Image 1: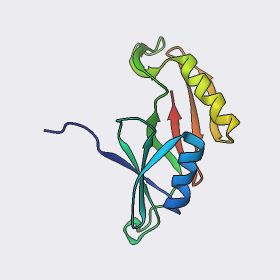
Image 2: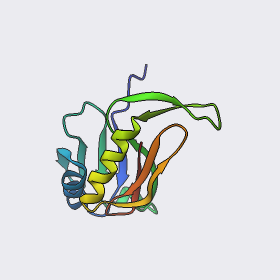
Image 3: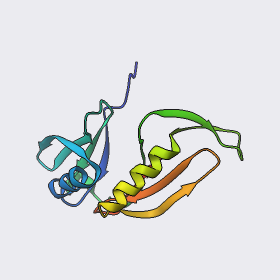
Image 4: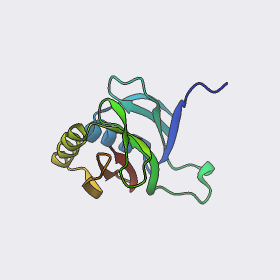
Length: 137
């Protein structure tokens, strides 16, 4: 039986350099370094790890950049109803998302989609050093 997700891999050109960016800009902690990989997670969190996978032969034709599909939550999560589709969507409190967005902007984090208000809350898409994109909501 599957009981959770241990980590999500994100391709990066230089795992150690990227890990420092995640530590400095997003407040993540570095958990382990092994060869071409560095594992990071939100500081003090029990959530899954991000496996920053540095360039290696296993990549073949893969490369960093683009939407990862990884959602970074900003505090406690609740289910909110999208008034357009009627779907329930998990998201953080809108005021927490906005506060996080402003803090990250102040640290120089680049956003490919700026803070947007929706019927279910707020979200923005941030971009890391290698062009990988993550949603905060």
